[in-house]
Length: 48
Image (cartoon, rainbow, N blue to C red; front, side, top):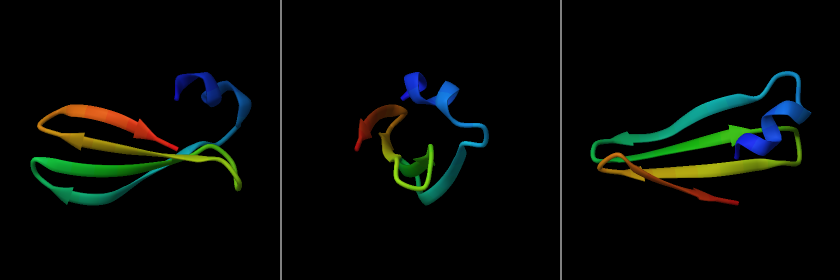
Protein backbone atom coordinates (compact mmCIF):
# COMPACT_ATOMS: atom_id res chain seq x y z
CA UNK A 1 0.00 0.00 0.00
CA UNK A 2 2.74 2.49 0.86
CA UNK A 3 4.18 2.39 -2.64
CA UNK A 4 1.08 4.22 -3.96
CA UNK A 5 1.06 7.15 -1.56
CA UNK A 6 3.70 9.12 -3.46
CA UNK A 7 1.63 9.00 -6.66
CA UNK A 8 -1.31 11.01 -5.37
CA UNK A 9 -1.58 14.41 -3.82
CA UNK A 10 -4.61 13.75 -1.60
CA UNK A 11 -5.11 10.11 -0.59
CA UNK A 12 -8.01 9.45 1.74
CA UNK A 13 -8.94 6.71 4.18
CA UNK A 14 -12.49 5.82 5.17
CA UNK A 15 -13.59 3.60 8.04
CA UNK A 16 -16.17 1.16 6.66
CA UNK A 17 -16.70 -1.07 9.69
CA UNK A 18 -15.77 -0.56 13.30
CA UNK A 19 -16.94 -3.56 15.29
CA UNK A 20 -14.00 -4.62 17.41
CA UNK A 21 -12.21 -6.93 16.88
CA UNK A 22 -13.00 -6.47 13.17
CA UNK A 23 -12.25 -3.19 11.42
CA UNK A 24 -12.41 -2.48 7.69
CA UNK A 25 -10.90 0.56 6.01
CA UNK A 26 -10.86 1.77 2.41
CA UNK A 27 -7.80 3.65 1.18
CA UNK A 28 -8.51 5.69 -1.94
CA UNK A 29 -5.39 6.50 -3.91
CA UNK A 30 -7.20 7.94 -6.94
CA UNK A 31 -10.64 7.72 -8.50
CA UNK A 32 -9.81 4.34 -10.02
CA UNK A 33 -7.42 2.89 -7.46
CA UNK A 34 -8.32 1.81 -3.95
CA UNK A 35 -7.41 -0.83 -1.42
CA UNK A 36 -9.42 -2.46 1.35
CA UNK A 37 -7.69 -3.08 4.65
CA UNK A 38 -9.29 -5.60 7.00
CA UNK A 39 -8.04 -5.87 10.56
CA UNK A 40 -8.96 -8.53 13.08
CA UNK A 41 -7.49 -8.33 16.58
CA UNK A 42 -4.94 -5.82 15.28
CA UNK A 43 -3.68 -8.03 12.46
CA UNK A 44 -4.34 -6.37 9.13
CA UNK A 45 -4.48 -7.64 5.56
CA UNK A 46 -4.67 -5.61 2.37
CA UNK A 47 -7.11 -6.58 -0.39
CA UNK A 48 -7.32 -4.99 -3.80
